[in-house]
Length: 316
Image (cartoon, rainbow, N blue to C red; front, side, top):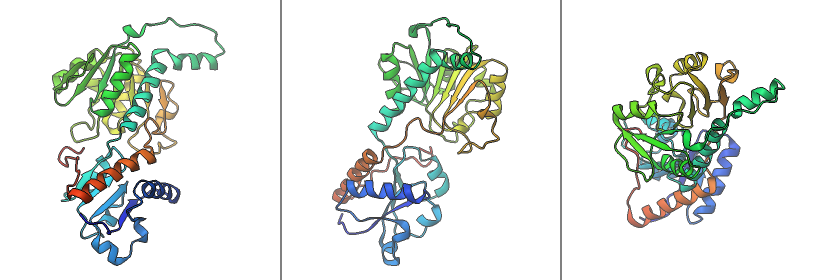
């Protein structure tokens, strides 16, 4: 494929975010002309076949009549898929080993936070209470992973290295060294029933929305704990609150929510059994992401092959 067509960066982010992405993308592919969507003239819009996107306005994409594919700089594309609806566009999502390593780091850090009873120690500090808590060996704390893609696999390795017994669940069967794996709805029941700490890393799809409802949360062992680094709507908020209020669940670390930023009136902010994080578990690194985008675009220029890796029907 010949070069020469301008590549727009389409995003609803603020000016500083757009500027930072443009700089990173231009550094990674100086041979290309990457510009903000607002800077395209009519002739450039008419010729554009590729766009790089980060939470784009679908109305802007519709102003590119020759657009064939979009390359997201994010790993999660459920919002993009929903916004595009029935579309012939091919979508490439970001697959970045650096992102998987960052997520694995976060999963291990917050698993240890729960494993070592950090929420209780924080409460004791507020109460000025000097009291050691019983220590539990990592080998005695069973970790369950929902999602065994690139992020889940990296997290499993980190957890195993910390001596936790790890089991994982995926929609279709997977095999991972040192990890007990489950699949299907029956497998989900088995996974939940043996997870002292449950870590959610699933994509948000029609099948996973509301997956962790009251009935499935009740399958967790008494005083189990939960980490959600996936998407907020995977967990039924009302059911989660009820399980925490009843003491069925001991603590939840929540990095994602149905509405973000989390509104000030939300119950999670003040619940004593909830740790709120601002969607920070695995931020995308603009430099490494841009290098991957650049590599995919060079391959496209050379071969004409679109590296589409999103199944629109599945939503990821």
